[in-house]
Length: 277
Image (cartoon, rainbow, N blue to C red):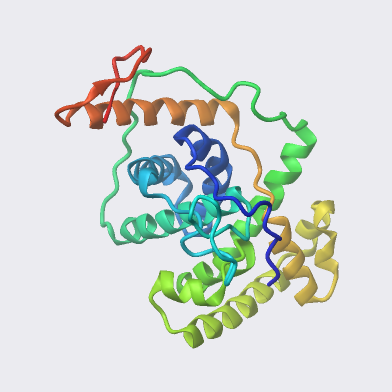
């Protein structure tokens, strides 16, 4: 798969957590469903992934798996990215999500925790244009269909299909991340694509015709499946009330966790008296 050309040879600065949330929420809202998280557990898992990302953000290195081979170093002494900073964030967050979901599936019981209260302001007003209702509906329909099709693929194959075809991660990087042999990755990718094409073929005609934006389903199966996967790379926006509510819960949890650690300084201007290292 051809990856985008590098936008810049300079090393990107470590993003703020607000930027991680803004870029990562629409992506993770879909990716967690692709990984098999039930809709009722989605909010809890989003919270877990973002809290893990917050704890690990200081060590985030976007070029760790995706530096341009033989590209030398930037002025900052780090390898240049061959993908966009947003794509690098998506890949990093997916790695966190995949590990969290592995524990999620292993748990016999799950509980739902919704903290109350709002410890911080909402920093994202006006950050992104609001889609029209028609655009939002079409995007949500595409996302729902692709999620349903991906869930027909065996989990150990599905994660590879998502990483390769939706995130553009190289086979060698997938093998390293999942601790698999490269030949195993290629075999599972081939089988995953076959499973996905079979799931596309089983879609009832009335459902396909209802989604005019997905008219590629009338093409040969391999082209229809590829078209659907390309469409899935455009993540529908998360409704603003949902995004805001999750952010406020995350802020409360971050404050609670930080407040339990000794030797911390108050975060200036935080209405709840949050603390930072």
